[in-house]
Image 1 (cartoon, rainbow, N blue to C red):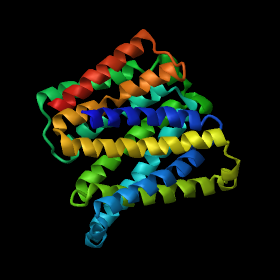
Image 2 (image 1 turned 90 degrees about the vertical axis):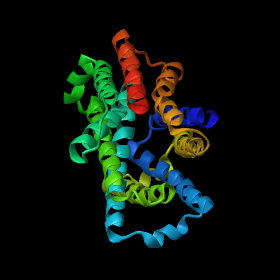
Image 3 (image 1 turned 30 degrees about the vertical axis):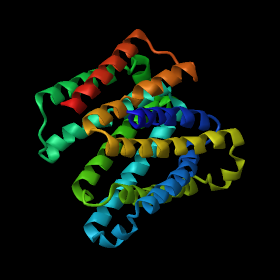
Image 4 (image 1 turned 120 degrees about the vertical axis):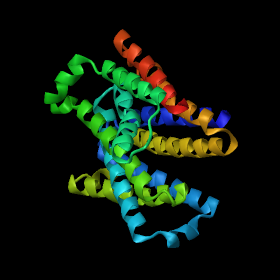
Length: 285
């Protein structure tokens, strides 16, 4: 229970720390720097768990899916952190979390996975809740490039969904720690290529020290969430661990209100409740 709560707490903190870190720093550059931190810890996990040998057992098809899933992860992260830079955390995160029900829908359509009645109800409730958290003025702001957070948040959700499906199809036989570490290499390369193409490589030294601390801390929080999540799965039942982890959205919104002084309208709050209920129904069904 302690590790499951820790997973939700650190996952929720990741968005808040990243939001603070990208206030005065280019989001793509911040993603690239942050990925370095995640990569180091990801390979440390491979070393600790002793799964190095699995590298030699990866066939060509699995490697292709690993790369594709890494590219999807990278695209999701780039979109997500750009959305956080220009939008409110309590609006961006719920849309990003919509990847949960998008994955279930596409897994049903493309992979033929079964969906229970309770799960279907959860999907519908979560979809309604997500739409409730999108204000009309937010949708109208898509024409303004500086306020197009909704476009990037949706992109984050879509790419996160494709990453999950690619992982499901092609790399199910690879150790999760090793797969994550290899995917993170792809994300790192992709992030720094984007930085180079945008001509921001030379600005690494110009990153404000305060921003850099929060960017690094967001990477550490991500790794801490992973460590707590997998430890919780080892110690306790998945039926209890996963619902608690999914409730990280509540932690994020709570911190966005307390730390960033963001506010939820009554409609958005009702949407958050719906997303929470829908998430729990999908996970426990």
